[in-house]
Amino acid sequence: MRETKYWTWHIAAGAVILILLALHMVIMHLDNILGLLNPSGGDAIAWANVLARSRMVFFVVVYVLLLGAALYHGLYGLRTILFELGPKPPLQKMINVVFWIGGIGLFALGTGAAIAAKML
Amino acid sequence: MAVSKHYPNRLGILGWLLGGRWGIERYMYTLHRVTGLGILFYFLLHIFVTSARAFGPEAWATAMAAVHHPIFKFGEFLVFAAFAIHAANGIRLVAIELGWAVGKAEEPIYPYRTSLNIQRPLLIAMMILAAIVIFFGGLDFLSLAQAADLPH
Amino acid sequence: MEQPAQSGREIIVYVRRFIPERDEKPRWQRYPLPLQSGMTVLDGLHRIKETQDASLAFRFSCRMGVCGSCAMLINGKPALACNTQISDVAGRVLALAPLPNFDIIKDLVPDLSPLFQKHISLQPHIQREDVAELDKPTGEFRQSPEELVRYLQFAYCIKCGLCMAACPTLATDPEYLGPMPLAQAYRYNTDSRDAGFHNRKEGAGTSHGVFRCHYAGECSNVCPKGVDPARALQLMKRDLVLDYLRLKRCRKPAAVQGPSAEAKRRTDVPAPPPHTV
Image (tube, rainbow over all chains, first blue to last red):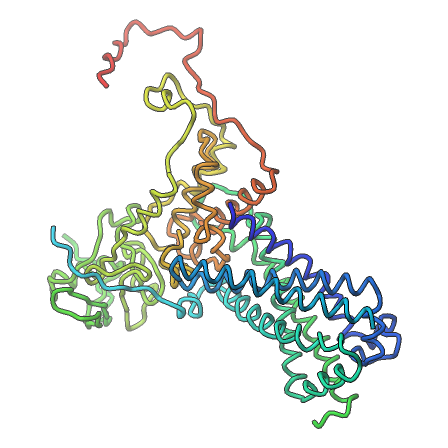
């Protein structure tokens, strides 16, 4: 049942990423059409725009959700690929542990950065 | 009964790449894996690069300068394309793996129509969608390369 | 007796040979074969064995596509030898190799025991609470045509192993259960006479179970009986997810239908002998 649980969350995370990453792509790469998310003009990665987004609670929440969903989805996918290469059970356990710790660590890093950026 | 030595005959990773010459879904499976790995690789680096914004405008400028080379811009376009393909195919896979796009079980009467026939229109639609997204994204990337002072 | 029409051409057959007493690894052996009209690959193999090389080993039985014995790789695609016309798949060269993803015992004979072990591990039989009814039936199980159609397609499986050879996951992961065992587990889960879903779901939902399928679809492409195991696996994933989310409808297994109350024993037909078991 555990694998069923992991997989169901993998699909749910994929659906979350579909919406949030599409939003991120629109902001980053279609910003000359919709200027409203980039108050300082066209360039999405100009510091003024980055600062403005970092301060908006909406974007902090979006980025943290996207980070969590993408980390879970991506690492589960990589775990699937590695498991299908036929590792022995001790190696399977190690992969699980490393991915959980690595995933949570990266999530903490990204969330910390998002919160620190909000405080700027 | 004496057991003679058997010879192992597993295809290995080649079995992921060399699908039958007969099924496009098999190649989409490989493409989905490759794009997923590409996006993951980019994403792990992306977390570190964008975390620089927490340290203020100078750190941000340093991080952006580090990735300002055209090769990075092209790499970002590839990631964008990979996302378009992976997402479109992912929508199709969710519809299939939750049982909506595979059709109901039916008595097989030759020539057999399998779930592959039923999901084929969805596959074509998703590939067209991905192509459209990549096309418009490509336009945007190109205009960015021209607008910025990138050596090209 | 009339001789079958000669199609007048000769084809070169390459067979992947492996004789364990003699060879370190498999190698190709070349046989020229005069082609006759309507010759199947199995016919061709018999002709080679009769006229050129009696040591050639291959499995066969029914020669009509219902037993599943002659599964092999024919010009790179898993297929049944008896079901495949040589002229359909080969121009000048026919390459025959044993089924991949299984160990080779000899020549074109694969070791299918992992297939059967995985099949058995998913309990492919009717499970009910009224075990006494299964051992000593008092009547029939009531099943409507609609309930039958929901699993009938997957019951046509002849256990030939072609789907297992075509599956990309099995190419690298020997522990993956594979399309055939999982499709058969779904067949029994969906059978209205069965109540064993909760027994099988643990086996099907392991880290090498149904979620290692990614719908490459080759299994359904090569199945000679139209079983469409890919469909069965996706429907099984749906069942497992709904069960995890507690949204799965629990249905009662099929009721037992004894003889009707108005039925009277015919006097001109002798009664059956008493049970001895």
